Amino acid sequence: MSPLRAKMIKAMQVRGFSVRTHESYLYAVAGLARYYRRSPDELGIDEIRRYFEYLATERSLSGATCRLFLNGIRFLYLQVLGWSSFDVAIPIPKKAQRIPELLTPTEVGRILAACRHPKHRTMLTLCYGCGLRLSELLSLRVRDIESEGRLVRVEQGK
Image (cartoon, rainbow, N blue to C red; front, side, top):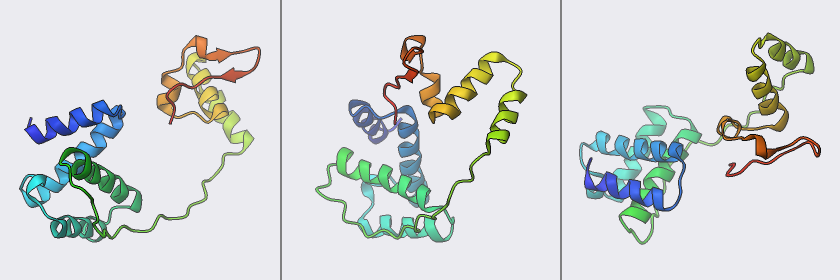
């Protein structure tokens, strides 16, 4: 492991970033290093800008993915390498406005009825009924559920 990678991991641990954030940020920085075949601490602003142009045009990454890469790379330069600012005008595709397709009550019922295992059915019901993320659902404990008040306490949720 390179010293720069170790320093970035330590900086993320100190700030309490989730495991997923660690993975995403490290992937973004590794992509930048692979693209130029040089360590990111040897790159300048123009090279970073060209890399984001490449992500948006040649790789056709979505706006959300480009923003994720931007956040990871910005973290590296500001928090790990100590740049005083990260004033890089980066072309990022606009966020697509999408209205999510909602399931009808009948469709939800059919999905739940298809679950034969009571544990899986309970997990899906909780996830859907409470609007939980998978990580939030998996971290729930019995003590987090107050059945009398019909409440579920989510700790460290996003």
